[in-house]
Image (cartoon, rainbow, N blue to C red; front, side, top):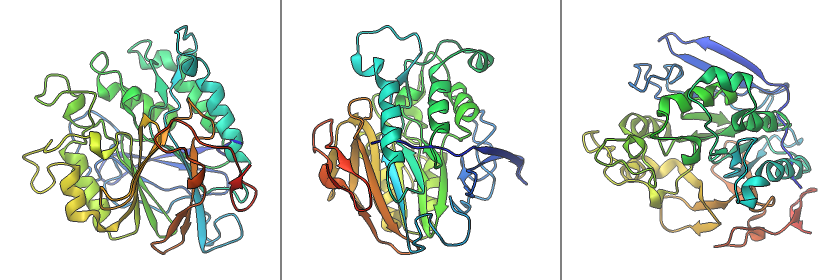
Length: 358
């Protein structure tokens, strides 16, 4: 049970018309398009070189353009979501057994995902890829020495489908290292911007960064890394993504009940995620988050159902398989009954065709 494999990735960096760098990741038979960063090409002051392609419009997601999702059915496609692998540095010698075994757990989860028939179109990782992973502030060092970022990249490269990660709080090391350094490493190892969106067969998948705002900026009035925040630039970008009207799944590491309220009071209408969802949330069909390390189901609390995921570091069965109807606002979580709600674990299921208990 577990396995994701990224077919040989071809990384293409293209200079946009507004001078920003957009990175496109392609799997061997797939075309994977994404728009990342703030989408306005104006440089948002964070020092990142890859904050968007300037058009604000996600491109076509994984798929070869023929309408076939890979399982012979052009009308639907599948996505697997996991959370919180927490891979530590290779020399980790702490007392947490789950961290000692985190790499092996993610590999086992990958194997289980690889056994899914028909296979998913792509895999989403809801942040906290690494844990206590920062060994120096020299980016070149991470290119030449074993480290947790490289370990995760190697595991992702073993998936047979594209893997789309987002930032979690453990992927940063504030205030020891600035957020911009973390963004540099994320781009270096995963070819991803701090936040981005992917379109696939009529659906939009928005990968937010719930650590991008001032709760992760030391010295600000709301500095508190135990809470999430998005920042005004990203909040406006998210509103633009939702405003397109496409059925949308929104991913965030921090669950929405753990993010700051009124975090950007001078940002016009979009002062926090709550106002963004109030004004533009009609297109959102599903919300998914990690961080809590256990399964939570909150269907009535937000404009769309919110599912909070258990961590793969605690149980290699902690993943969900969601089937989407192409170009229609319908989806089904095929294995939600395997989850042990309010706990950190899930049951083992068989994924040969329709998922079912083992």
